[in-house]
Image 1 (cartoon, rainbow, N blue to C red):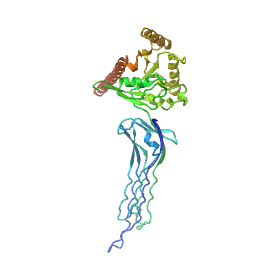
Image 2: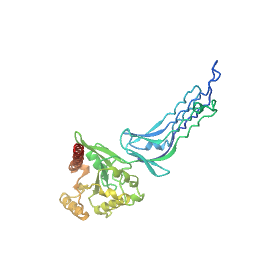
Image 3: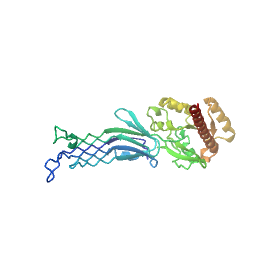
Image 4: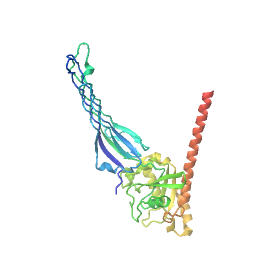
Amino acid sequence: MKFVDEAQIMVYAGKGGNGCISFRREKFIPLGGPDGGDGGNGGSVFLEADENLNTLIDFRHQRQFRAQSGQSGMGRQAFGKAGEDIVIRVPIGTEVINVETDEIIGDLTEHGDRLLVAQGGIGGKGNVHFKSSVNRAPRKAGTGTPGEEREIRLELKLLADVGLLGFPNAGKSTFIRAVSAATPKVADYPFTTLYPNLGVVSVEMDRSFVIADIPGLIEGAADGAGLGSLFLRHVQRTRVLLHLVDMAPFDDGVDPATQVRAIENELRKYDPGMLEKPRWLVLNKADLLPEEERQARAEALVQELGWKEPWFMVSAIGREGTWPVVLKIQQFFDDQKAAALEAAEDAAARAEMTRNA
């Protein structure tokens, strides 16, 4: 299955109904005058974030969406019925872009967020509105305006707290299995993960975070090579990046430090700001090394990289060393939350002092 994280669709708002030209015709009322009603407004097109959706795959089958047009007005000053709006459900984290201008229209980040993407046309005025002292029988009515038409691109950016980075076969899927209830496919060949997996990591009641297993990156991903090019955008919204690397020797001679630097280079090319995020090193597959060599090899790699951030040595397949990583991440988020709360309280106190001064 391919994860569809981008889709391009056409949306058509409904046309406004035309105003009516009509005159009152009743027995014993020879000078009834105009009584044409207004046309109804056309329906609009909205996007709405839905937490029950995870992909944009449904848009492979339907790419055009049309709202209903408004009805024309009628006699006796009867208004035409307004066209019904249509609401298109999309996953949380969907960014909406105008294809023609490449402008970001909006970003749906919470369940229930709604965004207007095509405004319905306005109904025309009936001839009753054109009556005047010099024109008591106007044979004129307004024409409904067309609804907006727009081609839009939907881009889904996963909303996860932690993103897993690493080359194919670094053990990301195994790691997410070890620390959460997610069950991504695991196999001994590259590109096992073809679409991102989300897992909820629960430390205890009311203390949890979401982790995303991103498909493996390769050199050139930022320029469109491999599968990772489609998913680099997903790590932009994470708060912490876990950089997994296979610390065991490679048959092809590519050492772990080279792989770490290669992915750093892809992040830098795609968005230099991503290197400013907290990025922790997780040296995986320690079980493949003799126990007496593990610590020395890990420390040598950390020293070679000049790594300043936290680092960990784990065996994800045996769940060895994974729990300290989880606790460290949760503590990081707890500290962030406490700092934000303290800042908000300080701001409120300063505002109160200003009011009382």
